Image 1: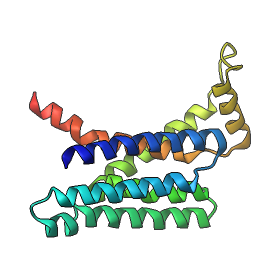
Image 2: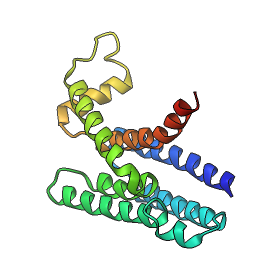
Image 3: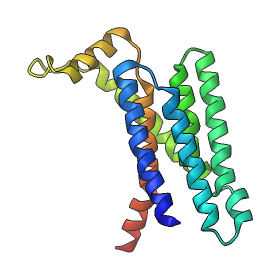
Image 4: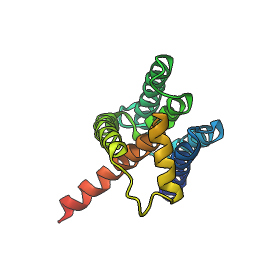
Length: 178
């Protein structure tokens, strides 16, 4: 069942990246992407439970499915509060739910720190002028549009913070093997 879980995580990474790209291009994150990510997490949870010897620990431990669901719900509530104060768009608030599910309870602190750092870096980058040589390219024209509108597509920052958070345990494991 481990291969099924790895496949689901790989597929979810592509959907997260597509959600970030869509947010960058249109300032919108479709509900279908969020629902697809939640569904993929549910399939992953089933695969993990089927491959587990202790289903109770898998379900109710803070490092298991219970911790993931708790993190997802907490992040979703935080997103709704930020949306209510008009600090986030609705898509960003919705995207917090699957991010919390995939990051889990133990990944919330690294995710929060990475989100803070990447958010500050993004805001600083948006203050830099675009070099004239590349100003005509569609990507940089979009950056100029974002800069002029003062609406930051936070979904991009959230997804990259999440991907870095997911990459931390394998990196730490590789460093310990040496």
